[in-house]
Image (cartoon, rainbow, N blue to C red; front, top):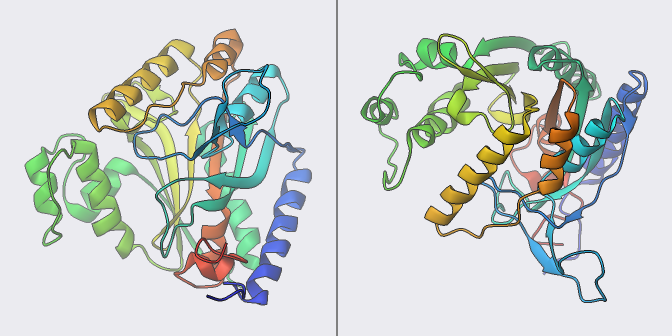
Length: 324
């Protein structure tokens, strides 16, 4: 057992510089820094995300004893936006159970921000500007190539399949010699596997790639645009093979959001997963009037990994999960 840090001092100092850069970046753009609760009465319903929970042991006059550690600050930030605070961001710790390894730590740092009156395309531009500034700290900004591509075009050009129409057999065949247990996998699961096993590993290491307009079935909390083939107004940003950010033109319809929560919970029940309480306060905020806006979450530890050219998240954490 060692008491020493998992990250070298160089990485710890670079994190401090990056935090200062982020705050300066948003101060210049009049985006307000806020703090929201780390413990919540409601949990994340996403079937692919596991949450930590704990029990409050004191006297309770304000709801249930059981609380959930946030997996992102998304819901309370949206409540602030609905209340009229305007453009805002939070830089802080979030928690996800079951994610520990080379690229994952159960406790990590997320930057999340919201821009009133923006759509996902405009927000992509601001994300790219922030990442360029961050990479300039380590002399990597000038070498960076920036590309944007629609999700459907990415699959058609790189894999020769149309993600909007290909059946599961075609998606499985496109995985090649990647051996996956097919039990219980949905069509979207196969599309995700193609992204993680075929596409991401081939992304150029010096390229910042924005993939946008995802299938409507992968909408998460994004608006759906009713094109000839409906798409979710969502994007993901990759630097090399690492996914750094996930953003949306935010859904503002309380009824639709409630339906998505219910579908999440049904899928969780089918998979035998725990079903946390739904965030009814978020639904109330949406129902009272949510402004047109776009929001994005960016993994700060992942960004530091790319800045230091390391594949181990422990190399950018003062103390990783094994040493915490």
